[in-house]
Length: 537
Image 1 (cartoon, rainbow, N blue to C red):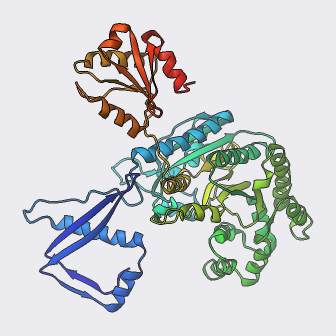
Image 2: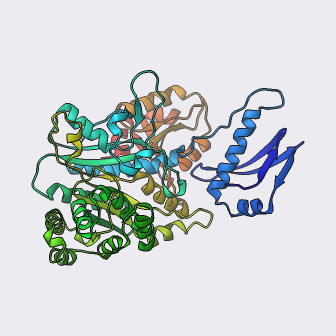
């Protein structure tokens, strides 16, 4: 907020000094000449401006540019500012290459565990989404009423999945779904938080023995984060039933369970004293009750903590809490069998704010020091600081909310935070100067002689026919040096060179770009030789 900033403008001249980094992200420095204006800016306002973060300054500049567009130009023609909406971004080919690699890793893991995929509409009936997200419901994007159904953009993929199960009367499925979701949140681009972003969900629906599907979901998180090599990570687990039982024995009124749960969920971002103050001052909880909660929610550990809580005089008398503790004990047995228990921590401060969770909940976080180290390697970049990179839990009652007869389908799942993962990987690659290929072309068909366009087109068509990824340059008589330089710039490993002599002898000169080795290959053997040299499976 800028205090005391009043500007009278009749004409604005703005110059943009545009720079592009190697990912194609545009940065701009602005200077503006103001003519025929009067400006009053207090000293306090000047100090506020100087202390504003870069993101807020960019927002204020964007507002000025929008104002300029509204005023129009000298010739009276209207203008508009070319930019993406707040909380969204474009992705250039290099960025998309990184994203595709991450998506491939995630999808391969989902398929390895036997999942099939579905898709649902990007918008749902407003009533489908209402009342499912607790305090976060205010972040749902409502669409303008067009005189028909009241619609909203989907907030996540879990509620549409539950609606899909109820509508189609499906009681058993193991599915994954990768798609965009939308949240009217305050974006933080450097932290991987956007208003439009992808979610990568894996869910198991069906009536099974306790904790077996839950353990597999945690195993999947472990596999994905390990394969992506993001650094040290920790998967925090808790149980909503344990939290509810804990709140009950501490004296929290039943109607305040969910709102106190939302406060506890902030303990990864705020110290306990601040969380306690929110419970008391904002949520109306008695201070002594908050103190009792604090004795529990600051605990974390593994099986030894579970055993300790089972012996707790208060919790041991609460049936709901004991159900959660017994299942948590069984979960750690299965996690040990899967070989992932060393990365899982039982943390009573984990609450997960969404209303639909009913049992085990979990959240994967990267070690902060690792994320900071990677981010600070590039002195010209803003540090990447991310929260959770995966989260999920059990939601046994959500499908029943949509079924006309209230029939429940037990479900458990996990969502991978692809945008936050991508923010880290993008920063890391930018800092390391690693070269990223944006195409998968295996060979360029080239020539050193003129009037051989037809022969190049025949050869590249033959390669395409057999599934070889190949290109030609779009000039009738290209220079060989330009063709070779194109291969070096784009990372194409091989060049298939033809000329009058090669055509006469029925061979193709195959050149390895990296070593400049050249070998004559019989035309009939060219496909096999390309596949062998590019390690194509």
